[in-house]
Amino acid sequence: MKVTLIRLGKLHLKFAQSGFDEYAKRLEHYVKFKDELLLVPSKSKEPEHIKEAEAEKILKKIQPNDYLILLDERGKSYSSEAFASYLENLANHQTHVIFVIGGAYGFHESVYQRANAKFSLSACTFSHQLVPLIFGEQLYRAFTIIKGEPYHHA
Image (cartoon, rainbow, N blue to C red; front, side):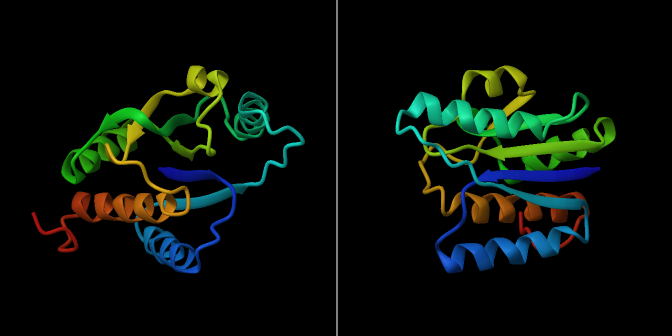
């Protein structure tokens, strides 16, 4: 299975970027992992126009057979073990899973319509600067659980 993370905007917090880079490197041991950074300059300050511009860029990256999961506050929450089980099931049925971290205003309706699932990291709201790091760690944790490795102590 191939896993791609699409994220909008650069990480400006150096510790968050270096932490994310560490987990991205570790993930290569388990899965073909790709980090796709999209920069979407917008001439408008209107949230709806910004979401439309982001949606256009996101949807161009998605192929018809890709399984698209949005990281969204209204998505389904999983324990680490349940997320690992979910990923393991996906690996048996999907060749390419794409996770997307949206912009500051969330996703445009066209992206929600294309999505196969929505996943929530927490009921808490996190800075966009921290989400890639937190998600990267959880993805890594899930693969160590699948492999029965000691990183996760249940």
